[in-house]
Length: 254
Image (cartoon, rainbow, N blue to C red; front, side, top):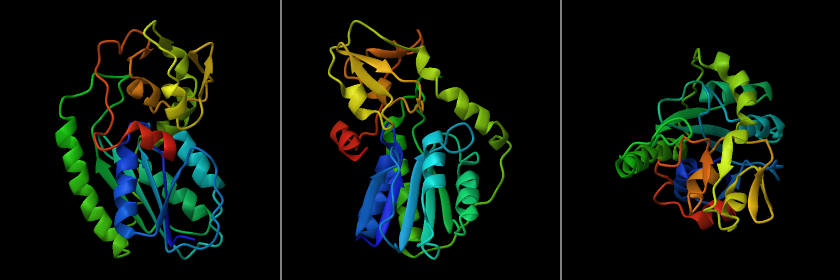
């Protein structure tokens, strides 16, 4: 059994990149997607969570995963959380700290990393992806040092946005009804394979959305034909994934 374990959730690779960098640096570390439930097999020195901020808090899948995770044998582990965000943590650490505390454990360390903002369904993305990726890597280095040294940095700050978080997450789940598939679709199944929560199945060679979507936009961003779009908003918008993360990694690690 590894001494350390990191759970992550990622749609475009930003959070996977952070999780990978931390896992590589602290060594002897498992890297597990939060797309499915997990049972800890023993005690760990470090247990980490890496995920994006959604609507002022945790993505729905992350909240469900952490609530279901049995930490009873790891109450003395160093537990850390790292949020990736285009604009700030906005409650992404407050929520997870409360959940972990309710289990008799504590969040020892929490930090936020600014990444390239890429919610393509809401806005046209910027042109500074490469510089943001470099800045993300630099910010991760300091976080790695903190985690290696077991530095304590709790984050219990409240944020007004957390009041809107619950209704927002419920609203997101069926937002895939706004997705459409153009004739450019070639049935490659990448969307189905890359979806971290199994929300897409193929039907007669075309993707069908199952309405338990997390709005991570993995299907939109990774489609090689840009065939999946949100209403009529995204057809002319560029696509993004972290430059250091490959499609194969997203699929094999999800």
